[in-house]
Image (cartoon, rainbow over all chains, first blue to last red; front, side, top):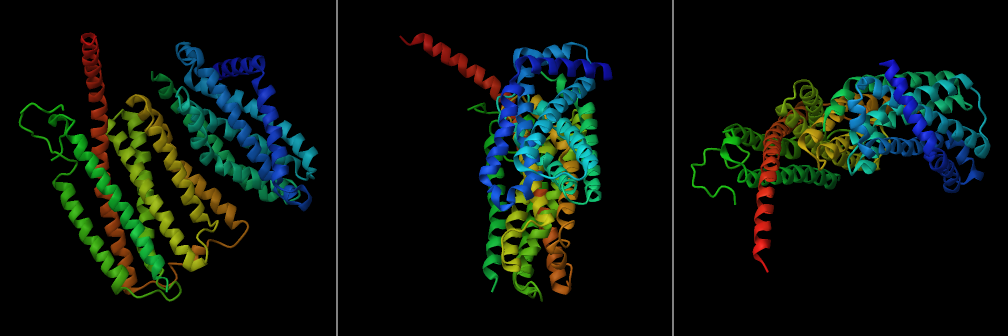
Length: 222
Length: 43
Length: 255
């Protein structure tokens, strides 16, 4: 299962690297969102600084959504779904592999956005450990839920509109949690952030378990 | 003094339930005609 | 169009049956009792005034909305486990009826909030999580109503339905923390449970009975309707093929 997961993750990341869509389109979009927030919220009034954690995670969610759409539109083209199903790989392994690939892309996006936020919004950072752990746990949660719902929406004509409707309400707790934890890490008291990390951990585990068991039946269908 | 809100919310609730019920029953009648009787087993 | 054959019609001609007629009659009677006690006989509340009368619908609606969500999750689990269409249709009926009651809960809640708090909406934990519940239900319904084969729709919707209750619980928890870490516990806490007695309690109790009966009646009808919808769809496919064939024949005759 783990071996299959690495195989699928490697394949997805190689595909992504070759096509460079994430690099050439999703990453610039993420930066664009940051600039748009600065236009919407006047930077001189301190609003931007106060809202930074929330804006950061909203930007991650929206650009991550684009990356997810992208990774499933590759999959449904050319009957790739059938190929994966016939390949004899463990469905749970395929799911975990996809989660890993999406997670790596999300992490890259988060690093990019983090640099962007630090430079553009000049935010002081106090709790480094909390910041990093929050980012990791939130990434796993977003990637796991995103992959599961991505497969639910995959291969349908309406998938571009369906995926956000399914995914964003489910990720609302992750948005709340990661934002509060970041607030605690950026100039707050870091100890307030840890319960949120725990909650996001629960979400991550729930979706990984649901994916490992639900992926098989989802792949079976025609 | 708040009777307006009370009446409005009761009307909304009863109206929504009534409209949905009528729609469901009418649609059920219409579809029943299209399904052979042996597929409708409740009585 | 189809049933032109003069066979004896043994099946019922609607989604009602003796059970639903009895259920519907009881629901109507209890709704009448609810109007009598909720709007006329019960006194206004000491702190909320007349607005407390909204609660007699609002609280039971919220309860049966959650009940519908449980039906959806249980139905989805059994469908995934046993491939039972019966349970899949229960899940679908539960979700749609739950959506209706969630909307009623939200609207009556807002109409209660305006006279009580002075605004239609506050970012209170319960209000926010109810709004999120509505969005989660709409997501399930969107998948269930996809224009696709029954198998595809049902299986994908079942995955979403399976996660419905866990999601509702997580959203609830997170929204609770989100609010309570920053301000005092919910505004609703001093709303209903403060001092409730006699006729008011009886009105609320009647509300629970009436709304539960309506819920049960709707679930049965919606379930049967869903069954009919699936039958028509599989029938319709045969019919469409026959019609297309007839069209093709007509086309050949035309010059």
